[in-house]
Image: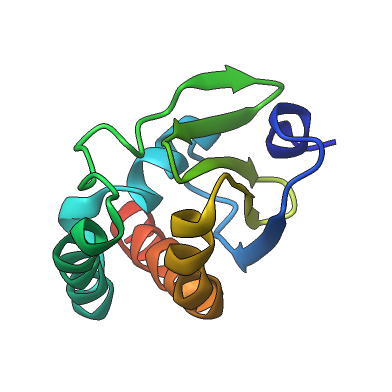
Length: 145
């Protein structure tokens, strides 16, 4: 079972995204997590969405994002775990590189804590898969070329 579901066994919402990665060079799951969630190197459309998020969250009483929100919190069993616990939601993401199979997996799980969390997450869940895949693809380009 992925670390995401060990950390959050009964999420309100969850999603898994997988892309192919080259078998060589190999990178650890922690290296992949750092590359995928490196907000300084996300694709321009994703950066625009992050910018918009920072302008809107105050209307819901939600704090702006912190630079360490996507820092790796734990490494176990070849998987990297990122956790963020805010007043509106709790978020966990696990990143696992399967170098032998040439696959990179990101599993995201979310617990919605209140009305602000549900309102905030409604548009996020629609775009989440596209955003995650774009961030993973961008990381692959940076790490594997």
